[in-house]
Image (cartoon, rainbow, N blue to C red):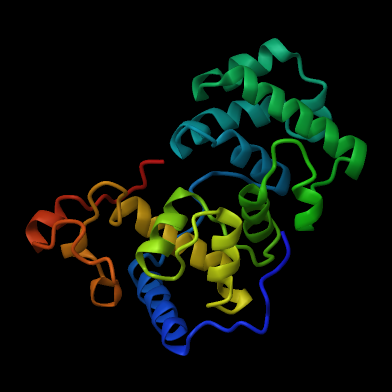
Length: 238
């Protein structure tokens, strides 16, 4: 999909409100960061692929043994399938996920000499890697700006009135137009942390929300501060 038309500028009031929300979320969640554990770009890529349809906590529990046994694309591409399935089993969908990491590792060897590429177009050419995963890797493994549009980010972008789009790529472009590129990666963390801890899908903690005065969706969840505070979690569920 092509980039948005640069001549179409978002309204100044929307930009100001969006950036103020991000500043408040940054103050609310000063420790916001990836909730998947990794130590290098290959691990970042693999754990992000494995995190589909499971929780970050489960991936973090399984990944130390996985990377101890198969720390590189070379090792993982040559791994016995049965052993990989045992290591990945606790995450669910273990056959599909084993297929994914085997094909991913093989593609890294064949196309990029075993190195994780640093360009979005190269990352999304890899098996099982979409824009969301690519942006996670760019932003968190390489320090290159990227907006991660997961279910939390998309939900909050619409609740905040930043966009009405539901397609993740269109959400990425619409929200990207509101913020300088240097803010994209941390913006993703701030919004996702807020979505996991307060602005829940079914029952957001509106009465305990630090950006309530700026949110056009205020009131879709409990507004009583005491009731809302009971909904706040200190750790993301997924």
